[in-house]
Amino acid sequence: MIIGRELKELRNYYGHSKNLDFAIDFILGNDLITFGVGKQELLGKEVTLSVEEYEPRDIEQCYFENHHKYLDIQIVLSGKEGFGYANVNNKDLQVTNAYNADKDIAKYALKPEFIFEMQTNSFAVVYPEDLHMPKIKLADSLQVKKAIFKVKL
Image (cartoon, rainbow, N blue to C red):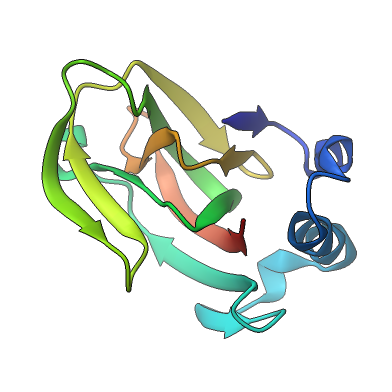
């Protein structure tokens, strides 16, 4: 997992794949806060963008997830939330929803190893081995608008 506080830091990750390079160029070349809620294909199914707005939730209402075919780039466009992390090899891992290949997601119950504070312009690049738990309510959480890029590996 890669965590950053400023979007310009994404430049450090050029060259990992053509799809990731496309996503980084798109992120740095657009004012993402102006995008409306919804999902769109940017490079066919290779790179997609979903924009969401929500109130962060109590941690008991959140869950860990991971993906096999895509990595996520999650960017907080406005607001503040907690973002949990755990490694897929954690010995306490409990599968709650087995991997669904059509939706490219599996869900898990587990205590976070770390919770990062994500605020405006913070980002996380999440690989398949990174279990992630977004949308966690913090004491000073604010309504979140988030861009989620799915980048095919």
